[in-house]
Structure formats: C-alpha cells, structure tokens
Image (cartoon, rainbow, N blue to C red; front, top):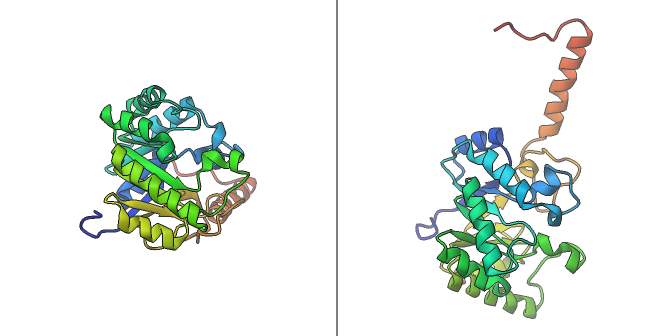
Length: 250
C-alpha cells in the first residue's frame, strides 16, 4: 500500500462483535492493543496488562476471522530478552495474531530480529511509548529537541534493519513524523503525529465516543456513542417500568 501511495487506516479491536463490524467496514489493519488495559479493563495505564489478558482478547478477536491483518501488542515486561520476546510472540500467534508489535527502537533491535527470524511479522512503535509512562513521568510529544529527532531517526533505521514491516509513530512532532515517513521503506502509522504518515491508527472507542471519560486532544470523535446507548437503555427502562419492554416473540 505504501508503494502504491495508498493510505493505511488502522483501528483497535478488543472483542468478537467489535472485530466483526470493523472488518465489515474494510479496515485493512486491526490491532489488539494493550490500550485495552485502560479502555476495557479499567487499569490506570498499559503497564498492568498481562500476557494472559492479551491472549484472552486476541482469541476473542481472532474468532471473528477478520480479513484485515490482525496484529497484537506484546505487553509490558514480556520482551526484555530475545528469548522472552520470541516465546511471548509465539503465544500471541497461537492465540490468533498474524503479527506482533512492541515499543522501542535500538534498545529492542535484537528482540525484533529474533522475532522476525522466528517467522513472525513485527511492527515497531516509536515516539511516545505508553509502556514507559511511569519511567518518563507522563505522556509527552517526542521530536521537539534535536537530540530526540536524531534518536527517532536512528531508532527507525534500527527497526527497519531488524526486519520490521512497519512502525507506529505516536505523538511525534509532525515535521519529524514526515521526515521519518520519507526516510524508511516501510509504512509509518501515525497517532497524534500529523497528516504525513503513511496511515493513521486510533483507539476505536475514542473514534466512536465510546469512552467519554477521557478523549485525547488529537481525536475528533465521529459520534457520541455513549449518549446514543444511554438514550436506548433509558427508553427501554421507561418502557419496562410502564409494563412493556418484553421485546418481540421469536
């Protein structure tokens, strides 16, 4: 798609029905993201997500048999060494993933090479790294300083050299994201990194207004999903209280 100049839309999926309706729209790339820790499991951040939880959600998503490429995040602490990275990548593939994603560049180059050597497609993740939020003391845009720009370029080169088929760029300054996109031969998928990446990814619940308690500044929800669900449930509650709401007989 990058070679043909086609834009690459991508969205997150966490369960069977969500995956089915997303796949029906023709989204070419679905990610079982560790963002499920916050938007599905109620954790404070992604660092609390376990391999068992990722496997559980990957299996649910894979049961929908999506036509889209199905990738899954390696959760925090599961790819500290090449051996651990391959072992846990294989677990996600066994659960139904077709590719895996992990955060970092040069620091995980050996792990990436090992995963690819094991025959598992790998997607990188540069810029703001959610799994490093506690070490960095919060979420912040990357690439503003020249040292950060140089580090991002070196990390992107390292991922490509290790065999990554693409990379997510999260909260990278738009000029640096554009430079990275021109520089690497693999697709870049942006999130909060400007319009010049090869594609864009969003947390699906952010896109449809399904998590109203927090919406990232770079997201413009296309509908107020929770308001519509509340209205539907409220109407049904009123109907039941009035003696109806039994539904149709099958």
